[in-house]
Length: 133
Image (cartoon, rainbow, N blue to C red; front, side, top):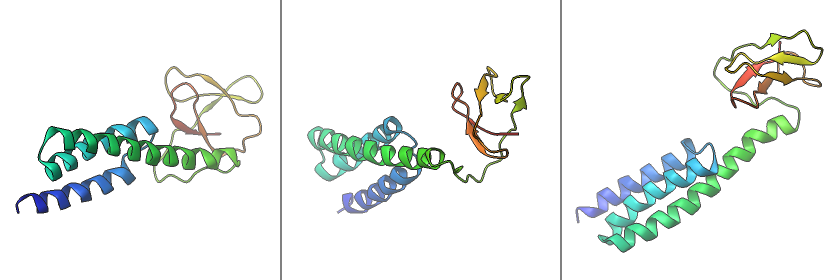
């Protein structure tokens, strides 16, 4: 009887983590595996159930992570910046036309030809987002 509230709580944690912490397929798989192992262990009360839950959670987490990653990239592929609530640094113009210097270490030179001023750009070296001046 004690395992039912724990299973419900674990299921709620799995759903929450599936939608909030999966930026990439790898992160999603890791989060899903942990949550699945917890739920499987509680539900089956043995190691085999935990292993089955971990496998199922890893697959589900990887799928959710891949969907989140594709959604994030879609805004840049279509030429529209994805809206984020955070504030970003602004790149420094370089002496070469169509290139800026990233505000993030190692301050790589980034090709911004065809990207409108004020748009959010992903630094290909650091993976962080900055504003095109």
